[in-house]
Length: 349
Image (tube, rainbow, N blue to C red; front, side, top):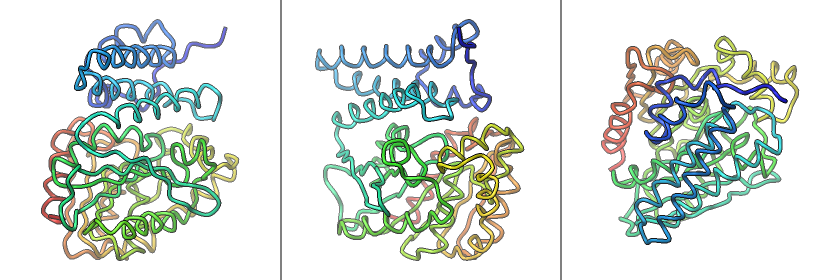
């Protein structure tokens, strides 16, 4: 019998509380010590999907829609600690994608699954818009990180729309379905891929100002984009890094995780990490910039985020560090989300 898998190191309590359904949280906490983490999270996710389907059969749309997002969270947690692209990893990720797609067809807003060509593959994404668009509709180009991908972000899209923004949530190179199903590997010069996303927004013709938002490693990614593409009007990062190699100080397991995203060996990843830096990029950012960070973030240090802020040439820039908060401001997430919406509203609307 294989060894029982436990909760991944990075899934600390303060992150769990803010990322999943409250009832699922208590069930998970009550059982995790005696059960396999992956199987348990998948079981709870399956139960959420079953309940969602039962409620939708009774025309209870609000309840059904919510439980698809609850399931999505559990599938994400189930697969978090699985670095290699195994049948189990792909099964869990397909369940996550399916839950997002089921969620997307219910509710007042328009969720469109899109693909943007890049090199010899397609980048997958969600274009989320209000049913009634306003002239020059502002839009947020949202880029996830190295472990949480686009489908986990659809949960918050309604909030973005309520604040007056459309959202394009993308799996770029090395992320989500773009990596797992389309063989789109992580690369150093990611800004070239993000330029294609901006091309897509511009070609649509309905959108005005463009903000780019990145969380965790995505915060590193979007600075490269903002530095090189002046069509981007606003940039915001949460929990980003000047050089993602610093994550190895937290745990060496991420060496292999990133290597899998890049489709290379661990030794080759060591060389790639040396090239993944914002030196020569941060000082080319000129658009309005907000840098948010958890003051106690052990994954990407607050000093790393402050370096991005210090080097940026933006005349309008803001740095916010929440003392005691964890990675991506976990523990002060409510404040961070609301500040994000207000700040973007001030710069886009």
